[in-house]
Length: 424
Ligand code: GLY
Picture 1: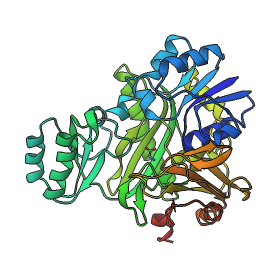
Picture 2 (picture 1 turned 180 degrees about the vertical axis):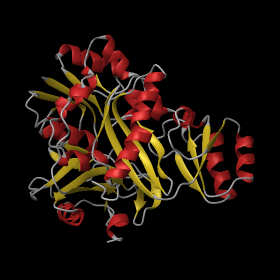
Picture 3 (picture 1 turned 90 degrees about the horizontal axis):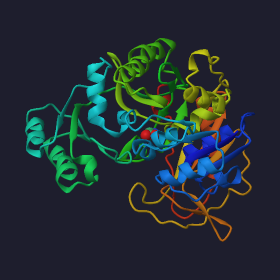
């Protein structure tokens, strides 16, 4: 079978790397891919949003399965267009992708189906949002309704911060139309966990839980990024907690979406807070997480192509139990100075051509080849994943890998996993 993976980040490199191990897969294309992906798959110069061209490419090349990495093409309806041509594609329809593309839809859905989440209010009028904040208890979380590349969630500690956030989102429109409506919710305290799960619209199978570090700086401080590191599994998610996540979040979400007439197929990612009152949803995503995928997939023994096909073919109920490697996995993101703000591109990267560290994988994100030399091409440049018997050893391995990489303005967090390790 020929497979097409859509996207160009570390997540897509990890997906391609894992699909490459499948006996079912003969050839992998990736659109547009990156320098690392080009070593193991054929990169195709098509943008992730060029739906028409991607459909034509899939038809012309007899693609048997397409896997979509990022949320934007899903929110724009790429799955609907592929399905019109009877092409097999993993992911939710445009309508079901609203679970990520509209936070207001997502929260109202959770309320309707009694899926635990923080109490919230929605606002289209700036003055009303300010009025609410004036009499609310801080801290609060202010979220732009639409997609904002992971930057549309702002935690505010007082009315001055709330006013600034609401002005930015609703008046200055720093996130464009994504800020036409806002959602204001209570701040939740606890340990965060990501639960990714594969669904065929009726059934859902969770992958191992993971935790990511969104903030740019040590101690989970500083601006939000796409993700500075992740690890898997999360020992604090006991069997009992996983059962709660399944029974109270994953299963009712799949049931509810089906009841609404918009069954969710593909990868559902629940960002959760483990509160004293049990797991509560921070947000849903309609795709694999980045960098969670780079930490989770190296531990998965099950054939990813077969798992993805069960989502499309609606055969998840008869799919064997997922099989996992023992031990832990940790991914450290290497970024370029300035990220998540402005950063330079085209900086030569050293240390990758002879990168050899056992059980350590260098997943490329923002990389490109310029005159046959590897250079930076994005804010997040690489994700180095280490696997080993336990989290500390996996992290040691990942950081040994990180130490081999050099470029001007290299930046990475040195404390991935600190929330778990400091408790030991
Ligand atoms: N790591 C969070 C995300 O993929 O949205």
